[in-house]
Image (cartoon, rainbow, N blue to C red):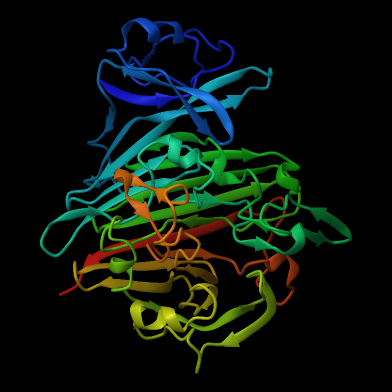
Amino acid sequence: MRTMSVLPADKKCGKHGWRYRRDVDTLIILKLSMLFFSLNGNNVSSENIGGEVTKNLTLSLCRSNSNTTYSGVMDEAGDSSGVELVEDGFGFLVVEGQDGNTCSEIVRRFTMTNQNGMTVQIITYGGIITSIQVPDRNGEVDDVVLGFDSMLGYLGEKNPYFGAIVGRVANRIRDGKFKIGNQEYKTTQNRGGLTLHGGLKGFDKKLWESHVQGSKLTLSYLSSDGEEGFPGTLLTHVTYQLTPLNELIVEVKATTTKPTPVNIAGHSYFNLAGHSSGSEGLLQHHVSINADQYTVTDYSSVPTGEIKDVLGTHMDLRVPRLLKEVLPLIPGLGFDNNFCVKKAAEGEMNFVASVKHPGTGRVLDVFSNQPGVQFYTANYLPDPNASEDEKLRGKEGVPYEKWGGLCLETQNYPDAVNNPNFPDSILIPGKEYFHRFVYRFGISD
């Protein structure tokens, strides 16, 4: 039996007082009233979540089996993938239904495990990758992405998009506005005077539908026309697959009913020394990025439209650089820059970047079909000298601090919709947006 934190609904929804998307095995959700009588003496306490004070209750989910396992299935080629996929619950999310009732929706978690001891966990809230556990050269397994142990962290105001799918336009839109033809659109300005990662409630803050086919998980979300100011209804599918080669393959597909900018990205924070190793571990990483150019930005980190060669600059990461040596040389707080990835041969994935941690031997290679990658070194996580109130505590209560992780967000160039010299970001009806990226983990000598 799994115990999880929940947020109670203001009004009863559904047969059991909780609305949920579907049964898995014999999932039984206990009524709120039963909590006061039979939950092993768990106390009711007040918690502040997302600015709303709600009661944090403990609810037990009972099933005939504690989870649902998808195994012994065949892939499209007819061969067993050797990957097991297990579905269980991660928590609850309070949502407002079309009828105006406030209900608690289940946030589902999917755990993929291959025969090499690599494990990936993904939840239906924000399409978030909550955990990637991979062995080091000695076979010791550690979690190499930053995140939280429960929904409380992901719903908190301090969550910096840990592991999420961000969109419908990742990165920044200058002044929160753009034109398509003669029509001007204004999007929600959620970071100063610009739009960041889709606005106030982007894809990272949505509950996605889930579907399992073989060893693949597909999450789907329907973004309505006008959501956060973007035109057109956009249907997005994100498919995750763990392979026997220690690759996590992510494919994003989207279609629209009106012309709209689309630039959807993954926002995982990696630390190959282990998520709890902080800046001390990250600074020992060697990073190389397959790019001859980068997009120049202004004081607000929005591209000016200029594309500059990396040659002769600290942005030249074409050969591996030790972060401990290069980070102090970067103007500002650290890397938060889009690199223009060198295009591979026709029909092949672009090699984007390679990250190595000599201490553990772990290696991460990134591939994508997109023209850019945003390299970010967690500059805005709290300072190590921050007060307790300012700290951001993640999994296992670990304080996550500045330079405690790095992001390699494969994507189109930022603010492409406002820069005609950048790759076109407008998706039109009848066409499909397609973004494929691969995280390949390995071991070096």
